[in-house]
Amino acid sequence: MAGPGSAPSSGKLLARLRAEVRLRHYSWRTERAYAAWVKRYVRYHGMRHPDELGREEIARFLSSLAIEGRVSASTQNQATAALVFLYKRVLRRDPGWLEGIVRAKKPHRLPVVLTREEVRAVLDQLGGRPRLMVMLLYGAGLRLSECLRLRVKDVDLGRGEIVVRGGKGAKDRVTVLPEALRGPLAAHLAEQRRRHRGALQEGRGWGGRVPLPHAFERKSPAAGWEWAWQWVFPAGRDRADRHTGELVRGHLHESALQRVVTLAVRKAGITKRATCHSFRHSFATHLLEDGYDIRTVQELLGHKDVATTMIYTHVLNRGGFGVRSPADRL
Image (cartoon, rainbow, N blue to C red; front, side, top):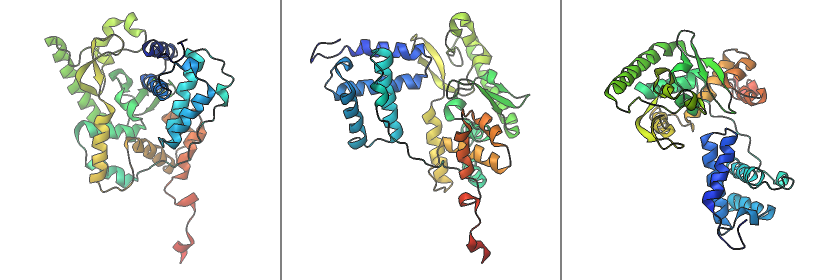
C-alpha cells in the first residue's frame, strides 16, 4: 500500500488490472475501459492509491460523474463495474460493502428501427465495401464489431450461413447469410484473396499475418498467414500488436463505417437517429413482422434471455401496442 499522500505506482496497478482482465478473457474494449476508469478515479482523488480509499470515495466519484459530468446511466454503471473489479479482483478487498454500491437506473428506451423503405434508401447511398458491410448488419443481424471481426473461415457461402465467433458474452452463434449477398461477398473475397497471395509472394505485410485468438498463436504460429484466418474486411495498413508489439494486419476500424453510415442516413433524408446498430434492430423487427418465431430471432441475435428479444415486439410496424386507431374508422 502506498503511504499517506503518496502517489500510487499507476503503471504497476494498471498492469495488475490488465493481468486480471486477461486472465478472465474479457474483451480488449473492456480492458481499455476499465483501465481508463481506474486512472480517472485515481486522478479525481488527488492521485491517492485506491487502497487508501473506500466506499465513501467511490460514491463521491460516481456522484460527480452523474451530477457534474452528466454522464448516462450506462456510462456510470460501466465506471461502477470497473471499480468493483479493481477492488475485488486486483486489490482483493472485502466485497461485502462493494455489493451495496447503488447502480444507476438505466432508462427503458425503444430501439431505433428503420422501415424496409428506409433501409433501401440508405443502401442506395452506399457502394462497394460499405454497402456490403451494411447489408451484413441488416441481413444477418450482426453487431458492427462482429462484422468487422469476421474471418474468411467463418463465412460459408455454400451453406448460406455465418459463424459469429466470440460475440457478446464470449458466445459463438450461427446466423443467416443473405442469398442476395452470396455473389457480392464471393467477389469481394476473391479480390481479397488475390491481394493476399500477391502480398505473400512479394514479401509485403499487406494481407500478411493477422493476430490469432488466445493461445492458438503458440500452437499454430503459421496460421496467421493462412487465407482462412484473414479478416473479411482488413484495414488498409499494418499496426503494432498490443501484446507483442509486432506488426500485424488488423481489421477495419469501427469509425470507418460509422462515418459513412451517418452521412448516408443524412443524404437519404431520414430524420431518425439511425446508426450502424439500427440495422441489427431492423433485422430483428422485420423478421418478427414476417412471422418468424421469437425464439428463432433470439438465436440469430445471440441474446441470452428472450426478454431482451421481446423489446422488438413493441416496435413492430403495427402502431402503438398493435392497436388500430379509432380515427381510421371515421
